[in-house]
Amino acid sequence: MTEITAKKKLPAAVERFILHWGDMGDEWGVNRSVSQIHGLLYLAEAPMTAEDIADTLGMARSNVSNSIKELLSWGLIRRVPILGDRRDHFEAETDIWEVAAKIAAGRKEREIDPALAALRACVSDAADDPAISPLASKRLKEMLTFTELVDRWYTQMLNVPRPRLVALIKLGEKIVSFLPTGRAK
Image (tube, rainbow, N blue to C red; front, top):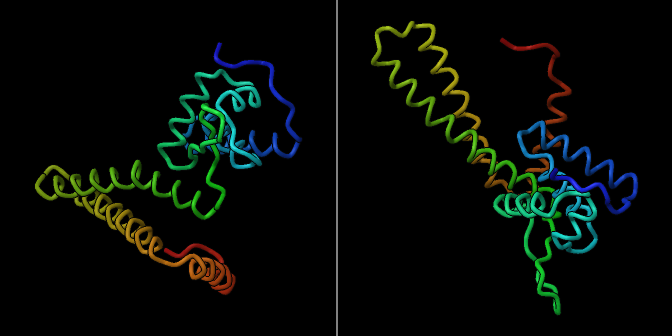
């Protein structure tokens, strides 16, 4: 049994957020405990020790320790020294733009980059294989073109200053409201 039943009482809105953040993480392929710990630290008013986290969320200390390692590797939390306390304390990045950028960078590295490498290899192999149908070859090229477009867009957005990025997103909302509904083919 990895979970501990006794936990500290959290305000209802905080508990709801932590549970929802855990569910969202689970949907994105991130361990629920990792996401819940991130949610707790994101809302925490002060840095917390692993013991504090385990007690608050009712999780086993080993689960918290492993989850902290993962969050540290993503750069979503950091160690914070506390004078007079030898234990490690942790706090989350609270700038939501930085959180989104770090998550996007991690996802790109784990998902988009390998997909690009695989698609480039598939397109290359398909070009030299007479057994590949023209339709399959065409679809592989289309998928590669789309994935390269997403990759270029991501790289471009990294260089846009935040105020301009916010303005760009707001402008996009306005432009979409002028477009006809329905799907373009």
